[in-house]
Image 1: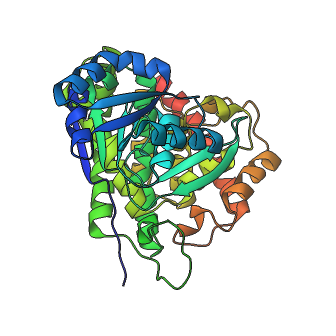
Image 2 (image 1 turned 30 degrees about the horizontal axis):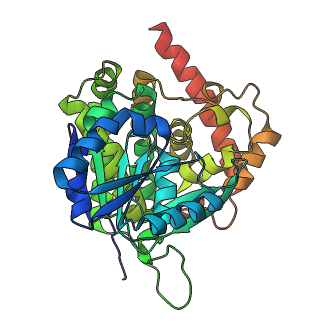
Image 3 (image 1 turned 60 degrees about the vertical axis):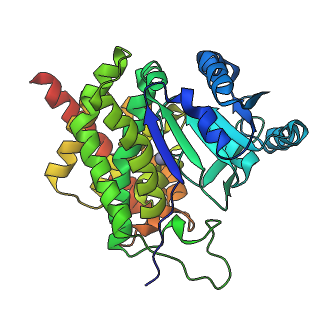
Length: 379
Ligand SMILES: [Zn+2]
């Protein structure tokens, strides 16, 4: 059987680690184009100046427009060429990182997240949007980032909601990888460009990816609450470090080489509703992971473990928590239909999934979540 595992070449995290950015740039070239929102650049400007001086490299700051569009990618590619930048640095949140991945196109890329809100930084893919912020396309690159650099001091100073959202995204990883393994489905790591084209045989996940996914889940459960409190007070503790690693490295490698399943497909389906738009990716994924557990009839112990954790850190456990005011079957069926289109990862579940069965799982999870929250509040 063909199996595959991919990852960033290097992952490094530590307090004030951005001071070493110049070292990693130096290992790839002499100068870099830094793509980040002006606000994020300001937050770390002092560290950028220090590292450039210390390692004798040149940083060209790109004035990132804020959206990961094709036009912005073309503009920044041109700028990188004009400046003669050897390296692309993506600094900030998801949009800046996705843009930097597309500009670098698989070569000499250093990703420096300033939040730990999703598991995307280590991956070899990006999501592009239109100018008016609608989904445009997925882009896949020949290689994962050369370096993913997490400055824990910077992340501890970001709003806690980002970190908690990252935990929501990380909670899904094990359950989706487990479903993918049970159904013997293919994983994204199989082909360099993520597409199963031509006569290349797709690949399955490895022992490594399912192991990382499992440890990811256990780490979130073990350290999540303490990490949230640490982040609330902007301090770096071992628990916060554990969660930064779980949200970024463990979840990132776990999903890309372990596979996605129902949780992320139902997340994509939720875009047809209005309420969830106001919530981060990981916040929605926390709920859709719960839906996946209901869909696969997971043991009550697992379901309650997930709900207890979500409630402890303030992740959504129902559609009401995602500002869906009224739940009716027709709307939920639309969500489920979108989640069940043929190319969706939901078909990696180890049984046949239909829009009807998904709609019913969403409705049941929503009701259970509301009831569970009420019962816990009474105690
Ligand atoms: Zn995700």
